[in-house]
Length: 284
Image (cartoon, rainbow, N blue to C red):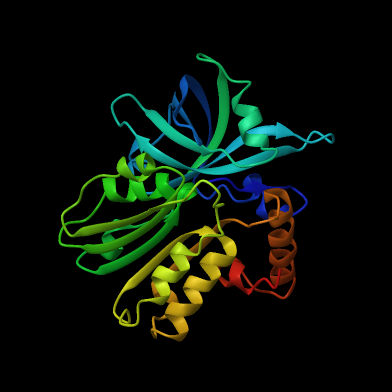
């Protein structure tokens, strides 16, 4: 998962939204490529409260660069795994076509190097979904989140998971959980991320999902379409759908975050709060 935070939007900066998070130094243990499209980083941190890092789908902000004005540039990623004994974390970075500030930053790191991150911010409560039926939709940018969620999976909980990725091995790493069915689609050589329609078409085939909870993490417009289908055609309540547009086809992460920041600032100016923020209400 990769997302930019730009300090043009003051209210969205980590400094203004620590909310129990802390800035930590990470010592790099290893950087390698388990698959051609993926870079995996392992490193050790020393958190004040390790228990907070043992939750499912924990997000962190990596400090990857500074602007010409000395302002920090961040990328948000999911902790794939956290070892409570060694405090080692795993984080996956998906390679994209074109320039990638995060991948460029990774190339500057070596074993023993230090990096900085802010966290943790849990994104998924397994207890909230215990004994319920879930449907999850994810592309490869969200596979680390799915891996973490399944690693904390509650008993007696059923799910169908739909995954699109560049390689079969990416989904093949996911834990095998009783009651969880995984449907994966591996893109063909000439197919591109966010354009196959697999996730959207899989969702649109479903008509009986009113009593299900939906979790979506993929290209932004695909996430929007999937959420709309379940709300309009399946009568799933909005509060039972959690959708995240990790990236947007044809638009750089920095531009996406500028749009988000502008919309967020407008909400605050209207006297609203962060709880009123819904990125799928943004017209762009």
